Image (cartoon, rainbow, N blue to C red; front, side, top):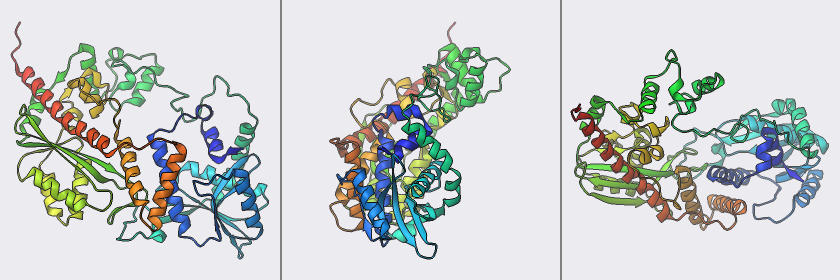
Length: 502
């Protein structure tokens, strides 16, 4: 029997349905958060029967039979499954309304808004209800209120918003029915099939070397138009084409094969760096359920900081790290550690001022030192600035300004294999470590953390989360990478000032 996820994936892209590759960090994180949200939401309701915890070994057919038996007695059911005629359709909660003489069906989703795919899922529930001859009172979506701010204790009743999807779902029933019929027919996917989303399988990216027009900085639409006109090489773009100033710099670098340096702009940036300089990088984690007071759903909270300290552009560096304790809210301690390292003078060098400033403000708020946080933020020098302003451009950037693209191009350094590979993976790893501790407590959040952990183990059995040490090392690579990058900018500026010898 197919699942509802199978059908939705089939309807969105048949090629992805066929491939069903191993889940990446984003998909695993999403599945864990959805499990967490469902448990919190359902536990806050008074249901007669709550079925199918994530570690349950019962088959879908067994759950379907039990769901049908409960509904026949008009018992309210959580985590039931209905058979839509070859597709097992989960319904997070079903409650009978004697007033409407029908069932109110509710879906819980770990999102802070209504997405198009949720309308398809609601339509599939509608189809399953029709197939089982169950009267419908309403089909509802409960999702996270993005404005909810956690107090000391979690308030499940205030955490959710609700949207009535009944009418929209009814209009999509025929579309879902047609999709299910094609899925069950086992028809092969035609070789020329392309999904409406033009996803990575249906429209695979070509080899994006430095010459490809699709690498134009913030110019994917222009790149596609040029490709449609038979122009795939940046060096062949017609001179009358409207381009941004940054794109013109990019094209010049690609044509010459040289790093472009705007001496005056880069010089102003370097002059703004005051020593001692503190190269600061945060790793943060986020959860659908705010873990600490003052946070909103999915609001990032810093988990690790790495600070490299240097007394001049070429001086040896000193390294300091801090990891947030999983057993308590230690953000106030975290903030005091930072202020103890950075003192009252010197630049705070970061890569992405907005994110790092938000982390500092949150830590300062938790410590009751908002004003101190603002003073620190005024000392920030953003290493993104010379790249976003195109004071420098390396042809191997291929239109991007991320550290992962800049470090190998300018310094020859990068990220070691076998460690945490990106911020999303670091987020997932710390969330898992945090959940493992929280799940050993008692109460609703402990149960939700346990369910999230069990969900992750079902998806990736036997895969342990990255250790705290690995996440710390990843964070340290970023802060040390900024040291290398700033030194590379100094050398480029000095070289640009050298007289040209004919």
